[in-house]
Image: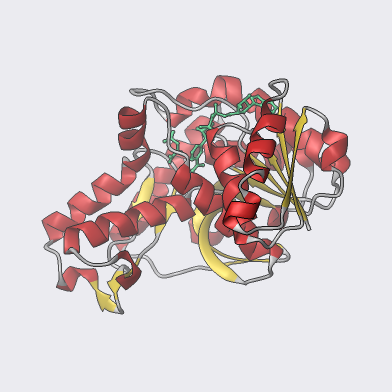
Length: 308
Ligand SMILES: NC(=O)C1=CN([C@@H]2O[C@H](COP(=O)(O)OP(=O)(O)OC[C@H]3O[C@@H](n4cnc5c(N)ncnc54)[C@H](O)[C@@H]3O)[C@@H](O)[C@H]2O)C=CC1
Ligand SMILES: O=C([O-])CC(=O)C(=O)O
């Protein structure tokens, strides 16, 4: 199975590395517009193969989409990341043009591809890919919730002084500083509700820290994060490539689910060979429903900036 990753920057290279280390894909094609950059990253990564014990072949190319032909899955990480103090939404002006062109080139050479959109503002970029590629909705997936949920689990484990492997939890809603909806009422430690371990105030703090997880790292790093984003993308790629039927929150086109329509936003889905094989509807409290609606309004406001 061939997987293409567009953008050989921080997230793209990290994602290619995790895919290779997990050793389930025959080939990863890394493509970047910067001359020689993807070739260099691919060569460096290939020189870790004997050290890390993988057989996935990583090929780097400069803007040559013919080399991506017949990819089963392609990941779009091309575009600019935010700097400290910026929101993800501020990236739309530059990233919309890049994502539109990249998606169209990918589909031209791999008409049956499943696309995973990472570039920000991710929910709006996922919507843009729907509006411009003509791919069926099950083949367009936005990555945000898998990462946000990993950060939620990290914060819950920290607050409870528990090992992360004890924790389960999920974040739905828009992938933005204000739009994420960490489902505190559903989160558990070995099937015991986390509210048994944490006060309501502490749980609210965990939720707020989760929502600004990306901004916190951007402030520390001077650019946005890449290890957890790369690992999260590789998890989605593996679920599709290996037909795992795993449940992740992903940005997907909603047509009435969660009382939302004509929007891509994070909800739980089942991922397998068919891409998004099912949108899972879960019961939400009235407060969570209200937060989801508010989050959707924010995403729709950003979508309205697209020139469709
Ligand atoms: N959805 C999510 O959870 C996350 C999204 N992101 C987003 O991912 C994107 C990439 O972030 P980084 O990798 O940190 O940025 P980066 O700047 O390290 O890498 C981006 C790469 O895209 C390349 N590129 C630009 N235009 C291109 C084009 N037309 N064709 C091919 N390649 C092109 C650049 O040359 C660069 O190498 C950003 O928009 C960032 O906000 C980052 C982390 C998590
Ligand atoms: O924070 C950012 O801009 C990048 C991103 O989406 C994340 O790390 O969650």
